[in-house]
Length: 378
Image (cartoon, rainbow, N blue to C red; front, top):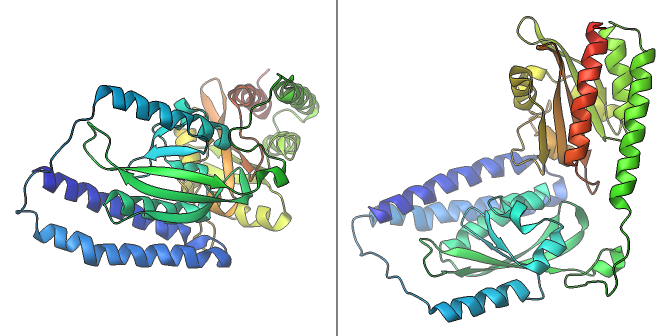
């Protein structure tokens, strides 16, 4: 029974990886060889592993388990946490089980946030399918692997990832130990793992972001007070212009009555006119995130969006979030007195800082004010 369950998990995991490879077809031409290698590797896995495993389901005994000494476990845990290189422990689906101190410093992600989330979410889109395939192979016991990946927040810096299988005591399945060896981060101005200042220097980043957010709120209030009240398109257009550039790289506005005629795309502000024109032709009904936000009237904040298909596809079938290299997004309803008059979606891309909880809260407030101006409610 246990071997049957393991085979079922392997098969389900394979299906998910295939779906991820399909989404990765839209990457740039220079990254396609990596995706193709991952696809060929998956085909070899089906022929060489899954089918023989299916034939052997009725044979073999239960795997033996070993128990480690408690004192040795404490020692190994301390070594893991204090290891000077970034190290992560992930399962066969590349979901983070543990991060050491160097890894949290290197990725800029707290261990509590990363645990339970796929490590691939912190990588560039072009590297995700290949990394996940290699992690699955290591977890199956097919030997160590290594590949070069890029963090989504620092895509220009190559990172050498080494993967090896471990079987911690008490764990039902093999896990994967990932060691990240960054390139010369000092040349890019980023801190190297293990670096820690000897003196505490005041960090003005949060203060600066708060001041910038206050400026956006002030400019939004001015725009709404001077916009023609009740003119939906004019109000939304002015609000989008306030948010575009300084607050978000992309601003997409879908207005209308979702329960009646449905939403229509009225405003798209993007890094370039061509990108805006392409997304303006998309139907909001084909954007699961927009449809869900309009239905529930609840805002959504996503950092490193886990589902590349959440905002639908462009005319060529490529996921919008992958094409735009979206690293964080906000999707808020334009709702007043229980009625949804539209949905506003904001993207931040590349190395730009992700939307914070404070910014999401401020955007929620601005969206309600925009809705009041759109509906002409005093």
